[in-house]
Length: 431
Image (tube, rainbow, N blue to C red; front, side, top):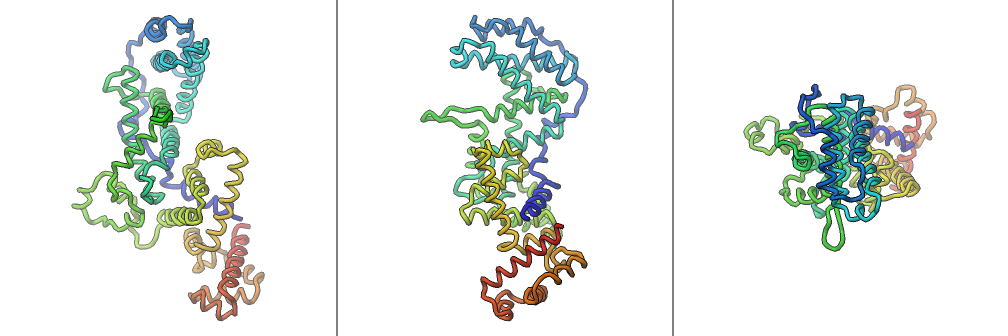
């Protein structure tokens, strides 16, 4: 039974403003155009220079073979013209050789060529993966990957930020990070300061580089290390004034008519203002956010932080393998966590916050719990007379205490009867 609520929640969370559907900054959203003609460095000459300057006569005997392999596989995987693939393969080779020359472990391995080929093909696979996703879905995938990494670090530990507030901060942070990664790509590949990805293949290269750049391990004191993007997110969080971490309920207080105030707001505050639904009644999106907020608070209040983390990653639409990796769980541990989450989800939906959930699902009492006239009659025929009376008094708006007294029930008995009735309606509705 909880699976229906889970699916409904996920469908609504993915629809419209899905966390995954956020574009990269304007300067990196490039229309797919024919590649510009330019004089590419001869791959063999380039490889020889790198072999001399980077590897300094080490055991990497065939750098030319590495470049040729990457170029051939890139052409075959993308069906692009060789002249368009050549610069990408050159830059992959350049990055791989830099890593091989700087890594003492690789230098001491005695098999530098194997390492170079492995690293090169890993970069090739990443680039081709983004290429096959396409411009739009590739940006969505990159944004989702990086968002999942920084979610827990985007606000200071002492600040209790809402789910929506975290998403707002993540978007603000990543816009700057994408610019930083583009500058890093220019710097490390010795490209002009004006370089912009102009083809789908170049955009795929940039997105793959951005993912690797964010995941780089930075050495820290005490023989520790941390991913670069997490360090950047922690710095970003420390720089935010307290008013930046706002709840979505606070955002709804902004008036769309305050034009002067709107112009003076920061870009992130204007973005939040644009997200506010101006209707007096709660819109579907606002209800969805309230359900998400309430469920996260419910889990945290019951010391179910791991369930809250699992739910957050599910909202980001991450595959099971990535969730296991991020939470450092085995498949069995993840399955146990999932079952525990479903248990709490059911209690949340049918007991503690049933009104909010049913209103969002358009299955509140005013709508006969979302049942058709025939289903409503079937429910009336299957429940006891006491439950019929309970349902009638509920629809008339009587307080729970008064209903319990009228039916001769203790508060606990009343709650059990009402939960059971909701479960029966849920089953009928989802037949």
